Amino acid sequence: MLRIGLTGGIAAGKSLVAQRLEELGAVLVDADVLAREAVEPGSAGLAAVVAEFGAEMLLPDGGLNRPALAKAIFGNPSRRMTLNSIIHPLVRDRARELTAAAPPDAVVVQDIPLLVETGQQHQFHLVVVVDASDEVRLGRLTTDRGMSDADARARIAAQATRAERATAADVVIPNEGTTEELLAAVDRLWRDRVVPFNTNLVRGVRAGRTGGPQLKKYRDDWPVQAERIAGRLRLADPLVLGVDHIGSTAIPGLPAKDVIDLQVTVASLADADRIADRLTAAGFPLVEGIVQDEPKPAAPEPDRWAKRLHANADPGRPANVHVRVQGSPGWCYALSFRDWLRSDPDAAARYLAEKERCAADHAGDQGTDGYAQCKEAWFTQVADPLLTRWIADTGWRPGPPSAVG
Image (cartoon, rainbow, N blue to C red; front, side, top):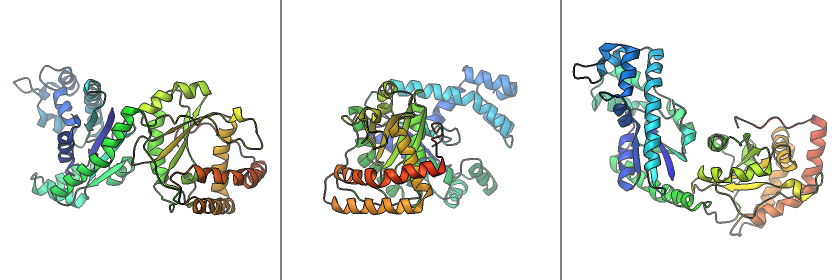
């Protein structure tokens, strides 16, 4: 099933988006509702709160004295963290139960106000952030909810910043216009991305790609997007030793196809096959029929270049996931080629010229296989000798598999 993490700052309009997604057919799991259930009268959660914060947390009817609890944690980050350590595990356990009970082809939306603050963004196929400026949210809090200006500012300041939420977001839905505009944006997201993503995920197939190669100007957010995907891949299976951003989008300033390439490191090809189902479940189905890289002159034996290739089920973010064995020629080549181009502007310029030539020659293609094949002669005849010399001159050696991107 497709799992979406929905979040947003206070008064951004997240609840309205959640309601709309539920109307469109999603199974909604609301963290705020679960947090209230976790401290209902007679619950283990309430008993833990009382044990930690004192009997004054109980009302005469056995319910939680919310004003007293708010006073106990106000302005005290340590006590707030203690409260969160009681409530959050209960909420997550219940959310897992509700998600597991949903139909296997469902779209499950978890509405989590503190998704970014609690570091849960990598646990979802898609993170959607509802966003509005601090000024707009301040106006909503003071006008619609009757808060004082000081209280409203304090509530906003206690949460993640807009920039922090944007970094975690696959999709940002702006909400500074009308309700109709917001709902229309949610409808487009559901139709154009969520439904096809879920369909691909259920079928275990990659998102379709059409058209010839189109080189795009370098985007500063390519590394941010790569790290977001890498976080999900690292959680997919303990056999994943590391994940690295490779390929053209990993070279600052280099125009490239808008496709993120990542390398997943494993200890053996058998492990690559063992994690295939987990990578598919994480949103990256296996691409059948691609089982090796093109051998290079320094290691011409084809079987040494074995790999597995996975690709995105998400139609909104093309990505290739190359699963290679640590220390294999293909694994080393991907890392050394990236580092060479990062360190040598002339080498990057040569590669760009070749990319532009092949892109022009294959602009009318309905795919990019011809473009990729076009560059192989350059890799063998031009790049390989220069890369080999650079490795010798610099003493380059691959480091350990990257745990951070």
